[in-house]
Amino acid sequence: MENQSNFIKTIMENDLESKKHDEIITRFPPEPNGFLHIGHARAVIINFELAKHFGGYTNLRYDDTNPEKEDNVYVNAILDDIRWLGYEPKAIYFASDYFEEMYQRAVILIKKGLAYVDHSTAEEIASMRGNVTTPGIESPYRNRSVEENLKLFEDMRNGKFREGECVLRAKIDMKSPNMNMRDPVLYRISYAEHHNTKDEWCIYPMYDFAHPLEDAIEGITHSLCSLEFEDHRPLYDWVVQETEMPLVPRQIEFGRLSIENTVMSKRYLRELVETKTVTGWDDPRMPTLMGLKRRGYTADAIRNFILSAGLSKVNSTISNDMLEAALRDDLANKAKRAMAVIDPLKVTITNYPEGKIEYLEAPYHGEVDLGVRNIPFSRNIYIERDDFVVEKPNKKYKRLSLGEEVRLFNAYFIKANDVVYDKDGNIIEVLATYDEATKSGSGFNERKPNGTIHFVSADESVPATFNFFGPMMLDIESENILDRFNKDSWTKKHGFVEKSLANVKPLEKFQFLRQGYFSVDTTSTASDLQFNEIVPLKSSYK
Ligand code: ATP
Ligand code: MG
Image (cartoon, rainbow, N blue to C red; front, top):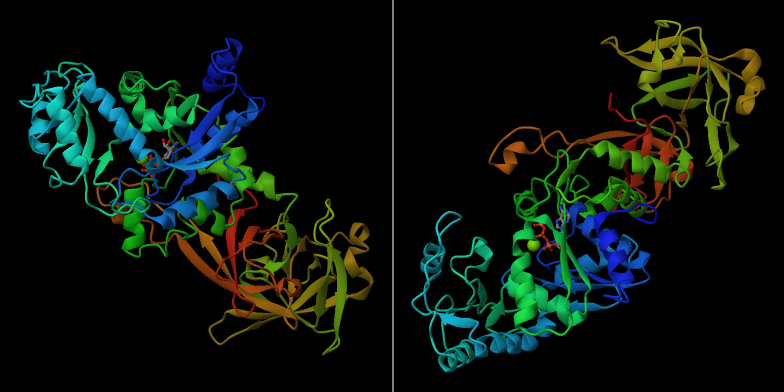
């Protein structure tokens, strides 16, 4: 956002230049009815980054006007996620803090003859609304007197009516070409307990009435929201003006972000969780920020990805490759490089003394100083099963085969001499010899080994599970979200990691040589090490 220009930044620049505002104030307004996903991250990042760019600030405001679905669990998790992304709100507010002021603003509308209590049922209201080609019909309650409306609205607040018995509506224009202006509902009755105000209120403001007031009360200068609210903007402006709010915010819409082969809507994500199709909201396949974090995605990579995707006025679906590239860029110089054998094949170094273990010092990263560790070397080692074939198939094959020599990373050259099979003809062991003179790769240039492969000592290594993730959703059309779920999206492999990783902590990140970037899972323990593949070293995109 620093160097990039975008349409919202331009609006803000102009507003500062013309002295319409002397500070840029934004807000991120989640409803606390679910956990944040990577789509929300776009809204978080653009709000915070834009305000920061202009030296302004951003509030976190929970839009808690629907008591039925909201919960404090979400309130806390949302703040954790925002902080994880690297942002600290200037202030934290709740829409419910403003319920009294909102009520008084609704009274102003009633006094101006701009709102009325309607006793029509929800179905009647819907049927009188008309549609894009047909104008709506005015409600029989539309011309109640101001006094009657004031009394009825107070009765609504005081619990004199049942849920659904009546609503407060704005009196605008039932013939407006914009459906949102056809006497929208401003208040409804609900006796559900509110996570914050408990049973203090039994009437709740609707989004279109509440949101502009919340923004105006906080002095938000630019209220950024996703594209589906574009048609609501005339109502937003109407509410701010007619309720006589002294500070006037401006709503600006931007495109929603989607990512290929995943789903983002709360309803679908909840279904996956509730049917136990995934292990929870933080399942590493989920697009929730807690899922991505558990998988090993970094906040910096997510931020760089969102910023480099740019900000558009249209909704966009972005391929996963871009996010993966951002991850590789971010992890390249941060992740320690270590060795893991994911699909082990035993190699016995027949000329290495039994029982001897030596420790070869090696840095955790070739170019950046991330410390050093000791790598055990011994008579029994593991290499990757697909790093060995009996007969070298062609010149390009740069791994181990009978009669050929390879270098082991950080250790010696070994030469394969013989193969052991089980009774079904599967290779279960390779017999090799090492050359003591080639310690830590010396003689590499003269000898030209047939490639360099990774290994771990079988005598001193730690067993580990490696988790691999594919796209959560399949590219098929179906109404049923469960049909689209990719059942093969999580595979596990069991192998070994080098001994220096015995005490890793959840969320520590590594590059396993020649394989990819991995993160220690949140469920990992010393006796059950679990590594999640964040992203392979190279893009599989052809
Ligand atoms: P969902 O239904 O996908 O969970 P929501 O819009 O109901 O999302 P809110 O809590 O209302 O969730 O969203 C908070 C803010 O995040 C809003 O300003 C909304 O516009 C924005 N937002 C939500 N999803 C996306 C998305 N995919 N891309 C960009 N912004 C988004
Ligand atoms: Mg919403």
